[in-house]
Every structure is written in C-alpha cells, then in structure tokens.
Amino acid sequence: MSAVPLEVVEAIASQELASRPSTPNVHISLNVRGLSQSSTLAINERSARLQREGRKVFRMGLGQSPFPVPASLVEALRANAHQKDYLPVRGLSELREAVAAYHNRAQGIARTTDDVLIGPGSKELLFILQLCFYGDLLVPSPSWVSYAPQAAIAGRQHRWIDTRREDGWRLTPAALDAACAEDPDRPRILILNYPSNPLGVSYSEMQLRALARVARRYGLVVLSDEIYGELHHQGRHASIARWYPEGTIISGGLSKWAGAGGWRLGTFTFPPELRGVLDAMAVVASESYTSVSAPIQHAAITAFSGGPDMALYLQRSRRVLRQLGPAIAARLRAAGCELDDPEGGFYLFPDLSALRGRLAARGIHDARLLCERVLEDTGVAVLPGSAFGRSPAELSLRLAYVNFDGAAALAGAAALDDSAVAEADFIDAYCADTMAGIERMARWFEAL
Ligand SMILES: Cc1ncc(COP(=O)(O)O)c(C=O)c1O
Image (cartoon, rainbow, N blue to C red; front, top):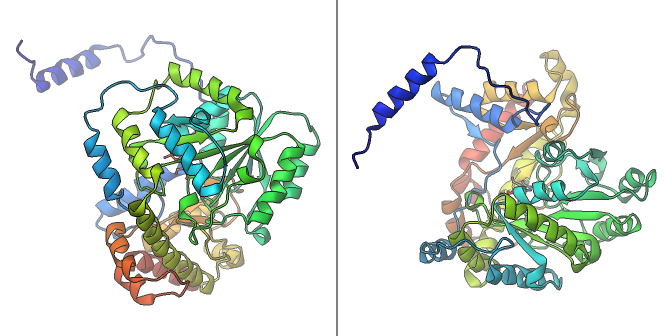
C-alpha cells in the first residue's frame, strides 16, 4: 500500500477547512464554565516571549523536580519496556503490594495490596475521587492550584478555609472545627498537603494529632496529599494517617521524590473502612483510563521497594534542598519579605505586605501585577498567591527553587554532611543561577 505523503494530506485538509462555511452549523454547549487555564501557563508564555527576545529568564514558576530519575528506576523501566499487556484497573498487584509495604515501613501504617489504587498521576486520582464522593471539599488557603478547579469540574462545592501568616499559613484545628460545626453531619473531604505546595511548610506530630481529633469528630474523609513527603528536608515526614487511620486516604506518587512527573504514576492508599470509595473509583477508572502504562508500573516497584540506591538518592536530594531553601528565605527576609525557612519540598511563599506602600507608589496593588513587573524587570518568573486561593489583593508569591542542574547538585551533595550548616560554597558551585535570580529579585524589592 503506497502511503499518501504528509504534505498532500495537509493540503487536502486545509482545502477542506477553507471550503467550510465561516459560521459552522455545529451546536456546542460546554460543561466547563467559569474556569480558565492555569496562571502557570500565562507565566510560562510570558517567560517564553522574554527568552525569544534574548532576555535571561529565571524559571521559578513551574514546580517540577530538578533531579533526574534515579538510575535504578531508569534501568528498571528499560528492563520492562517489553511489558505490553493491559494491567488490572487497580494496578499491578506487585506494585500495590510494594506501595502497601512502603507505608508500613515508612510510617508503621498497616495496609495491604487491596488497599492501594494506582493511577496515571495523583492528580487524576484526586479528580476521580471528587467525581465519586458526593460531598463538599474543604481546602486550606493557600493550596495547590488544581484542587478547587477539579471540584468545580466535578460539580462539587468547595470551601476555602483561611489560614494566617502567624500560623505559618497552616490549617489550625480551630479553623477546621469552625468550617464543620455549622453543619456537622455533612459529608466532606478535607485536603491536607504537607510538605506543602505552595508553602514549603509541614505539620508537626502534635499539629497532626490535633487536626486528626477534629477530623474524627466530624467524620471527615482526609485526603492526605503526601506527594512531597519524602522531600521533608530532615527526612522526618509523618502522616496524619497515623492518628486518623480510619478516615485518611494517603496520596503519593513518583512525580516529586523520584523526579518522574512525566512518567505519570500516582498512588492512593485507603483504610479498609473506605474500601467503598476505592471500589467506586475503580469503576470510573475502568471506564476512563483503563490502567496505567505497564512498563511504568513494573519500574515503579523499584521506587517503592526502597533499598540503598533510593535511600542515597533521597538523602542527597534533601541535602541540596536543605541548603538552598533556607538560603533563599534568608535573602528574601533581608529584602523585606515575610517568610519562614522551608521544611520540605522545593517551594517558598513570601509575603510582601510590609512593602505594600512602596509597591503602591509604583502602581502595584495586587500579586498578579507584582509577578508581571518582577518578570519584566528582573527576569524572575514566579506565581501570584492568588493562583493558590489567596485574595487577589494580597501581595504573596510562590516561587519554586528548581532552576538548577539537579544531576550536578546531587553529585556535589555527596561531599556534604547532614548537619544543618549552610555551605555557601556548595550553593555557589551548584545553584548559582537560582541565587542570581533571587539576588536580582531581592535588589528589586530593596530599590522600590
Ligand atoms: C501538591 C500537589 N499534589 C499533587 C500534584 C500532582 O502530581 P502528579 O499528578 O504528578 O502525581 C502536584 C503536582 O504538582 C502537587 O504539587
């Protein structure tokens, strides 16, 4: 059979398009209203334009892991490239077993293969959870960009619970209680993400225990988004499932701590009490994505099984982030921003309220405009706090300190020890570009 050359196909297609009436007779009614593309995309487009104009851009908008996928995981994927069968909807049994064993090992949470659901990224699992669960979504503000839009698409109500800078923007038990008290029996999902995107903060055991008590009082389902758990800078991540096992679903995956966002593998781990939710989600999965890519699932067993390679990779990742995060926070504090040192992940959320007067004198009254001006004047791409549920007038920003060569930094981290001492030489050698962007931004704040 002779193939039709691509140019011919394109020419025919464009003629067909051109010959169609300019007012099409197709009636459409969209089911997604009042939502726009994420502000991450807008910043990316602006950054790309500046780069095309030959300007230096410091890309701290998009939160992608700077580190390469661990070599043992890449090797496992290579060895499994031949896996071609559709896998079970809930996920490969050996992988689900490895995920359950991982939670046992890491947190002492007893789960079995049957408690685990594998999906194409935790984002997709979060979405189908909202499709399946008939109830409201409680989301602390600020939170990751996609929780609230997903609720809107799924036709669910969501409610922001406000947090305060004095509490490190953490959800307090009192605020959670207040959000539930007026209608105590309503079915609800609380999303708790720690270490947090966008904040970089986590919760202490005491804080988790106190939140667990309130969650139990109101019978909440807690979706504990622990996708950055392994990137707790001190390696001391604790899951709320330890204190509220019967109501907590743990969300995780390979995207952040294994640097494999594009592999698209997420995990939900349920308590036996919520098996019905898992079953319902499996029905939706079976009618939508069927199952996650087979080679990726086979390879992921290596990540969840741990072992010396993974441990070393994680230790070095934490060392790098533990050096860089506090150094950036200190420089921004010196320039008048309010923020604490980060505890995990690779984000910071500076509050510029103290600079409001000086920013207003430059005509800057909201975070979106602030980000645009920072990008235009310094080349640093960051996102406005309003993209994370804060009010548009609040002068908060989220920056992702990921624009450095993660492979080189991991190699360099071999020479660091695990103390909390700042190593200026390490930062100069491996994260110079990131610090150069921070320096430009800090000087811009100082010169206001
Ligand atoms: C807090 C948080 N949760 C979930 C996700 C989704 O991750 P994935 O779908 O890659 O598993 C992200 C990704 O940026 C995130 O930052």
